Image 1 (cartoon, rainbow, N blue to C red):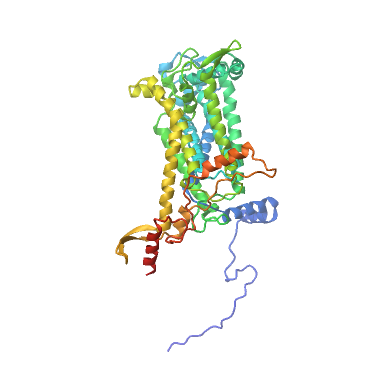
Image 2 (cartoon, rainbow, N blue to C red):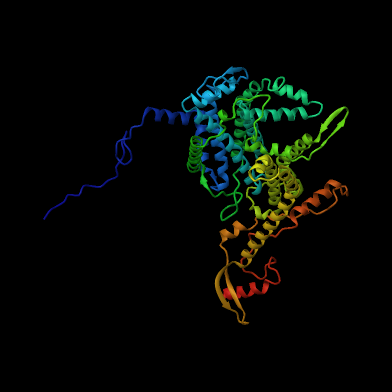
Length: 570
């Protein structure tokens, strides 16, 4: 028989230099010890630690509408990196020179140094064409991602208090992106950009009283003047500085306010359901940025954009046939094309061209209405509360209809910029295309408003019936009275909160002020409030699924709801 000796068991007391489990201490590097000491002893280190801890605690919703901001940031990064590289080879000069570069068909042609340097980048610098096309493609994608941000922010009501300033900042980012794209569009000094600059010069000269002075100020003299030298600092210094400042300011505002989210289980204004900002949300954003960057580089390597060698150098006396602006400025060109013929008159010995003044006024008013809309809606509704829960577009039918009407208006102007290509490709008259687009510009927004609002109300009615009666199960039950009724199953609590309205505002009532007066402004406000809210269906998130006593059940639905409730109880 084998005997065992059991050693006395006692609690191990860690001595100096040992861990509580008795193992030798793990060795840490000098840099780790210095980093830990700096984080604990210096104000800057403690601040970084606090920010990191806050990033780990803060949660952000993982909704697809939040992805466009990452796409915008990726475009800005690509534009910045490629723009810095292009600065080493580009020559911002309108001075003429004889081309003798790597593109043989243009040998001996008189071109500007700006055009020659762009050709040098495209054909002689290793990877230069890829860098230039990546810069161009990212510049085309940037306005699109910002527009998508504006649309998602608008249709979900994310522009309301306390985020009105973030809406204004996003709109200013869009305007700066347009300015950056336009200024960079002209820098290659090819025939296409020269045609665009000639249109810009004509617009400036067409402004009464100050047109000639504005043209000389912009171009530095007679066309083309020193436009390349003037636009280059705007493109490489002013626009990037403004863009970075606006993006940073908007990021700080987003950090200060809690991120908005859609209603649902656990989603309240105080509690945010989502993923931690660090590391989860940061990893997702970083992955999407790499994907967007990779796609931009892939498109730049496979798809040609702005082939200036085919357009040739710019010439003050020539213009390219069928030239089109970059897509994000197409609505400006389209506004000029849709003006009827003969819109001008002579006054004070000057010709006043309404064909120019009216489009400028309409586009300016359109842009101003976009930037001030949050303030206008707040005044109309009289709602000055903070909103941290987003709206489903169908639950705000008037706002959604306004947004759809604005999209139709913008789209009509945008399509009009290609009226000549539509005419040639589809073998229709140019005048006929313009006439159709003119009618669409007037009637289209109103028609789109009516249809969009009717669709929203129909979807609200569907949600209302879903909350009241539940969804169809396909099970048929014979009632005591002999009729057959299909059984409905109540929706889940999460679905109820998701599709229901968490806030049901009411139209304002016309009441005198403290002095007993009914001002015109108050009457207009009440009238617009009724227009905004009266035609809607209240889909409350707190409604019970099958309850005949609910006020929202119509008289015709009450017997069915009562029978269904009885059947469920049995």
